[in-house]
Image (cartoon, rainbow, N blue to C red; front, top):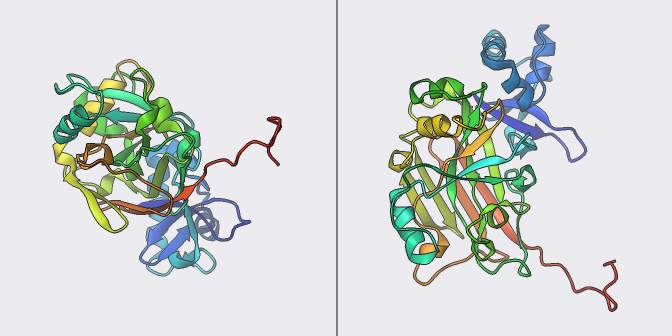
Length: 316
């Protein structure tokens, strides 16, 4: 299933939906039409576990190809939000997880040349998340080295604590796309959270594809372009630490809970690694996609604050 969080109108509440062809079927409305309670939010569905997904699948099968009246809206007529608009916890980011990206980072940044022996883990706060089409904020007072990274996002479905690699896949709810926006000139003594965690630095979506529909998460093409020019293209098979290894490693010391998100790292082609280096600026448009999941498209806008009034008082 392709699951989305969407809004019909600007004043409407966020709702949980399933994409079927060119329609979004409202999950709670479908359940009501069939006399079966179904969750109305993505996190509630994730919390419901496999029984919740099974109940939703049964309702979709019962409804057949034509959803009950009042339960579906044309995809073109809704606004898609981030699948989980407000994650419960920080996103787990993985650095230096593709061989070629390790090499380009060593050339351009202050990272080591040797391949990591264990996953490099950082985090992005929930406030960094934006949904499809929302603008990436460029604050020139904060950064003049705004960079891009396309990544496969893994959404945890059941609690994982000290799980083995063999059992890791059982804990995955689904997969999505994330752009790990990074202010390269805001890394602080090797700490990345400020560089990668500012507002709007985690574009996320457009949907979550349930794990049963991704036969092999290590066989997905991923790409990113800026202003229509391709900058990154690779395949998840080139990860140093595959999805199962990441879940096993993180869960050795940090309990992964339903709704947690792991952004699994980016391949080569980032702006910092180019010669000459390239950065994002207001007016640019970033697009990123992953095979079998979907595409994100985001404008970059000027978010530089105006000057403070004379005397340093608050801005109007």
